[in-house]
Image 1: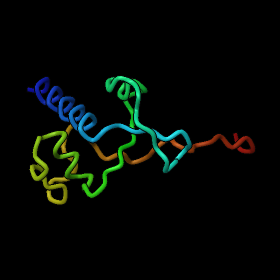
Image 2 (image 1 turned 30 degrees about the horizontal axis):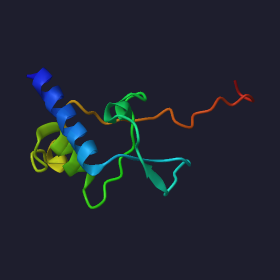
Image 3 (image 1 turned 90 degrees about the horizontal axis):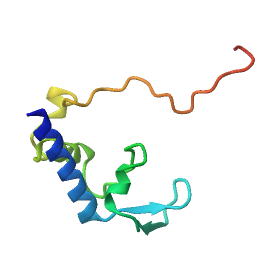
Image 4 (image 1 turned 30 degrees about the vertical axis):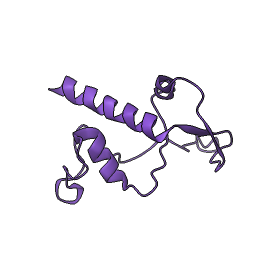
Length: 102
């Protein structure tokens, strides 16, 4: 069952990327984008991280679609975050060592 869920998640993600077309920016937080010219699978190769810009699509609906195949399947307000996701309490981005106190 978990195997099938993972396969369906990846299929839905790849279909979304192929249908919506992947673009990239050459500058940090750049607004000007260019079409992705490499194989679609290479999008997932950089540490499996990508930023998605959803125009007119609530992010929870998109995540519901990826996980369940139905944008209305999970009620986030009543049920919290659906598995396999979890609430991330802290991040390591921007953490620095203060040499004066280290």
